[in-house]
Length: 181
Image (cartoon, rainbow, N blue to C red; front, side, top):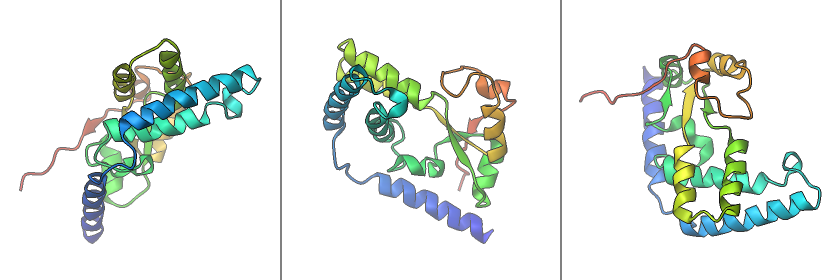
């Protein structure tokens, strides 16, 4: 029981720290993202492919923007598993409450999202269109390591979006509902 109380305090602390000011506004980050997309395209044209690093900076800025725009209860992408509003399986929530290892699964593969954002920028999308796309593709779920392995075993899911991959892995997700005081 004591460990669960500590975990709840960590969750509350994570949510409180996320309320701090961001060093860079989303507008500044979107301008930087556009410049990084141009750099990625130049690297591709010079023969450096995405798998060799050309898209890495775009992916990193998207990680930050994803938290900034869609997961506001946490301050960094590496703390998503502490997000009190995260979607997950009941087994993952129980494991998190016991202090056991849990993992975050990005439903929309990060590389695919980055490539699609590059295409949006190239087509001249507005900042709002890019923001909307980032938010729309920011769904993450909390899983146990065993459940993550089951999701990974679903054919074709690691590099391209598969709408029903959680269901195909036999998983059902929900959001935790706060207990009444």
